[in-house]
Amino acid sequence: MLTEKRSSMLHGVLLITLFSCAAFYIGDMGFVKSLSLSPMIVGIVLGMLYANSLRNNLPDTWVPGIQFCSKRVLRLGIILYGFRLTFQNVLDVGLPAIIIDAIVMTVTILGGMLIGRLLKVDRGITLLTSVGSAICGAAAVLGTESAIRVKPYKTAVAVSTVVIFGTLAMFVYPILYQSGVFDLTPKEMGVFAGSTIHEVAHVVGAGNAMGKDVSDSAIIVKMIRVMMLVPVLLIISYSVMRAALKNGDASGRGNIQLPWFAILFLVVIGFNSFDLLPAGLVDFINTFDTFLLTMAMTALGAETSIDKFKKAGFKPFLLAFILFLWLVGGGYLMAKYLVPMIG
Image (cartoon, rainbow, N blue to C red; front, side, top):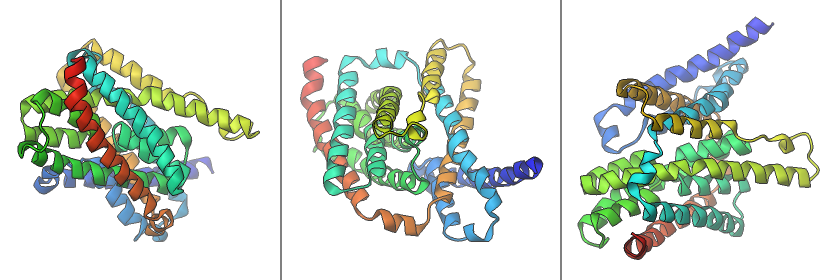
């Protein structure tokens, strides 16, 4: 019986692995690269196509394997994400970027929760969308999902919102900068882009379009935002645990523990800061990590049908749009006036 169960789980894992291989292949195509869409985003699209077509024709016994990818594999992917960062990144960019990153993150999350409540958006979707907008797009949504454990379709809705507006920012920022609408120095524009564009891939795409001086600082500022995911996850997990205990739930969500994967993420960053591994090995780990995160995104997509998007409604996208306006407007003003003041 146990062997049969493991075999069924393996079928689900292999299915997601195949979809992820396809996502990597598609992500390597020229027109997909030109949009700076990572294999992770391609993966969730493929997963959703599967959920709305072939899903009902496959055995339910494969579902545990899919869920394994959306949870266990996801957490390993987040841990290995730390090999993209070093604490030297923080020192390189200086105090202004750290302060602006902290302000953007705090206001976006708290403001998003308030706006979500006013719009009567589902609380889980609101938190995921706010954290995704505030920190690092899909990766932050996935990390938060692991801490609060919401239904997969809510995660997919939140990922969709941050991908849409992150992609929009990737095209809009270079156009407005090169036309002079964003009247900023290369350093200020780098801080602005890195502290407000959603996805790491989108920051890379926008930065490359604006020149090396902008791109270098933008990517470092963005990586500092990624590091801020750790304290945010710790705070969220603690808040969820407190709320559960207050409501008398001593057995369910009240048992939520410290997000160990977030702690290990920080440990990996510290290890990577010593530069002990060959560059080639680090590149391999980062590629493997992207594959793991692609598997997690694909699995989440596989749990998301069109009916569930309809259930979520238009309001999550309205919430994400309002946060996008804040990131553009508020981020620009801080880059314009705060960076020279404290830099």
